[in-house]
Image (cartoon, rainbow, N blue to C red; front, side, top):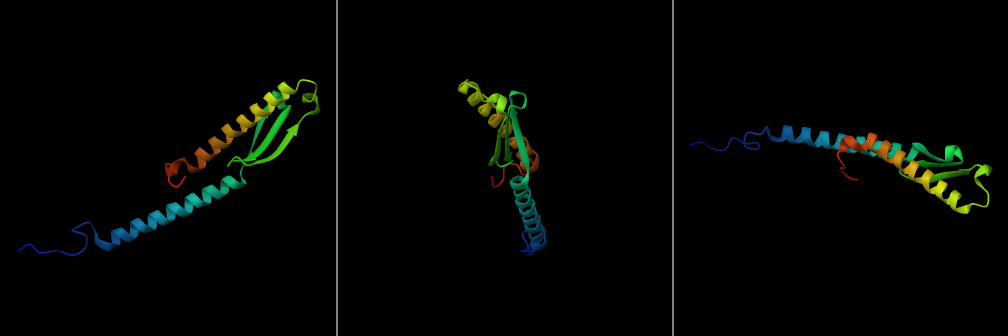
Length: 110
């Protein structure tokens, strides 16, 4: 008679499960820390050789918009284009920082 050996059928029992839970908890804590860092990390999107600069967090919350007086003239369309370009530049930089800090988590919890 073979009988049951206890544990999880030879998979290391509760000890292995506890280690797995500890690893998962540690990963969750590291991910929360990385996400908090994104709130504090700032990037700047720039367009027109610095005529427009937009500062935002790595979570894409805009904190400041700077427009050089030379960018303000009668050509509103050009200014609008510069603002859009600066925003897109900032978003791309925010995505890069986010990928750098959170990419190792493989999209978990995002």
